[in-house]
Image (cartoon, rainbow, N blue to C red; front, side, top):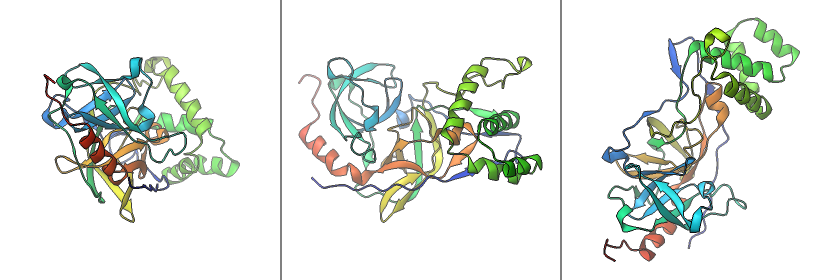
Length: 304
């Protein structure tokens, strides 16, 4: 078995300019018809993660999505609203190496095999990709984005120089200050806590009017994003993702798998920042392992 190496880009963010349009989406995806053939290859693992068929009986996902369910089953949900059991074939040891965050699951019952599945590229390439998963989707108005950003800056530790920049009401200077604090996890956590409490309040009571910022277990599709490579290895992508998209596919054309999403950045979603480099596992990292798994686990017929 080949030894694999994965490299990751640093996370870089670009700020959405709230003055350019009447409304913005922090998340460029749209709801997808999960029953359409194009999307039938996707599965939801529990209520947390995304996976996809890469053979009629094998599902690819992120290793950190693996849970110890009953009797060794990873309960999997397909587009027919059916739950079925899959067992772990291979899962990287994320405790030792979070950079090889992928796993293969074997579907136990032939009645749940998929006719639709991705063909995995033996060699990934930098290219336009598509992405779909079960992460959050929320379109916010300019007013809502502005209110969220202002609240975050209140939680962040702003110095006097930065306060003076904010007083100028210059949007460029505000975004400069915002970018300096975009990795402030303490401020992000306070902001999320605030939003969770305020989300249920109507605007007349002073809330932000955000009915639902997280969740919704429906498939969301992003048709316009890119995967990036270093030395021939795909290490990042700019697809809009959030919690629930872990293990989701990055693919090119109609059916060619190019990579798997590992980690997203919640500050990109919450603050209206678009990540230019989220973490992705390259298909080269699991190609040989997948071929071995397919060979060692042939598809059975219903009566076998």
